[in-house]
Length: 325
Image (tube, rainbow, N blue to C red; front, side):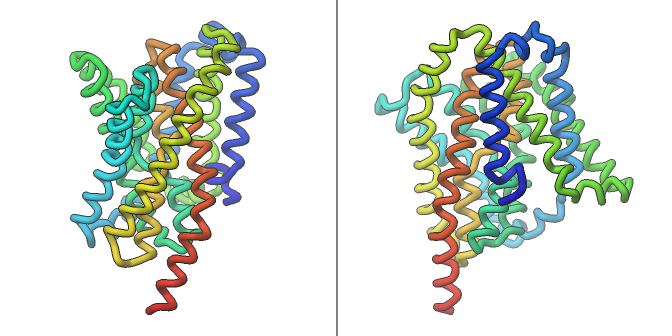
């Protein structure tokens, strides 16, 4: 839990960025000194260049041993949270203004770092969690914009968006993966702890820029009111993900180590994937990007907090299963 990307350190960095944005939003707003032209696009490219260089496709081999179960789990990562959201909206518990931002969070892939670390610390199968998290993020590059545009936006714009996704996300990810395999020195560097922090710091700066833009065009009192309004829905969303993840994971496998890994795959949503893609999709509307970023930030904070509460019960369950055997 000492790694920035999976422990409380990254949450602290995000909170600090948020406080700086709240203090002087003009600095990082669209016309500010720190928000130079194309800085967001450059940050997205850097994030996926680094992420691609760290990808290990061989982690997917374990998934091929259980193809049906793997397919069901990958579908559950997206459709279980979407189902909860649809139910909440149908019965009038989710307001229309929050449905879009929560839907965007619901269709995100599972996060790699915290999913794997939580699984290992709770006695789960870390390799299984890593394989599913890797596959989920690879699929998410295409599924997130496809599902968003299929539900909310003009389908005619998808072709242009796909080109942006390819140029800013898919191509850098592939280039990073190829370079790490061509140059052994680079492959060794990717295993260093500091190397994994670079994309997360880029993500934190993206959070800062989007917060500055949103706060610059919104009164601070309105922002605080938005945060208070969004937080209970994000908390409910994260709690439901954890409870449903617990129920479904105990039904899909008899192996308790696999159950723990499945639980954390189902209960985590990736800020590392969500924020860069949101920056591409909503690059023309800073206000819309702000409305997407705020719930996503809250969900990331809450899932790390609530996830730690499940570590001990999950580990006890695995140990009880080992004693029974």
